[in-house]
Structures are given as C-alpha cells and as structure tokens.
Image (cartoon, rainbow, N blue to C red; front, side, top):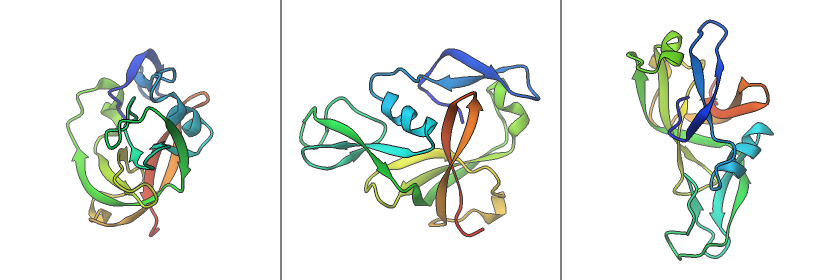
Length: 154
C-alpha cells in the first residue's frame, strides 16, 4: 500500500519493473510500528500517562502532552469504517494491482485509532460498513512486512 512515509529505498514487483515505495524503517516515530510489523505483530503507540492510543505515531500525546509514549501490541481485529475502490492508479508500481480496495479500519482494542489499509482478496461487492476484519501481513521486500486486512467472515 502506498505510504506517505517513504524513503528512497524501493523493491521491484515480480510483474512490474517500477520500484514499490518502501516504509521508512528508521523513522524516529514510526520505527517501532514497522519493527512489530516485520515480526508479524500489530503494535500501536499508546501514551504511558493517559493511556490514549495514537496512530500515526506522535512525539507528544495530544491529550495530556506527555512525551512518555510506547507501543502496545493489539489483536489486529477491527471493522471497516469506510472504503474506496482504486481504479485509476497514478503510482506506476501499483498499476498492475488495480482495481483494489483501500479501507479505513477501526481497531477493536485501540479506541480512537483508524488504519488506512488495503483489503487484498476481498471483492468490492463483499465490502460493507462494520464488516469484521483481521490483520494480515504482506511481505513487500525481504523481511519487510506491511499490515493489511482481510474479512473475518470468510
């Protein structure tokens, strides 16, 4: 899935010679998220003071202004809040994947957190608001995994 937090590193898909944008594994705020994903775990930032979850990761808790923030592993279960079907891809590395679904996922055990994610293997006519989903991890380069979601109803 395209990510605004990309760096110059990229990998090529099997069918496409255009490099896939890679997440910045060394970003000071999001590195723990990516380390967990590479271990096939979903970890969301949480304030150690007020216990509020945050995603994307922040440097200061917007609720209590604490800088005591850590990452908490969550189940990866949630539900679809909304979605869009991408039919006109403008990033060449993803052109062979259209059409595909990008969904906003609300996590069950991280109140207030929504993740933007692909829904591989889910047909557009199966999508619905509140559809239960589970996290899955796709390897996009050797040892580099990204969280995505699939229907829990299958």
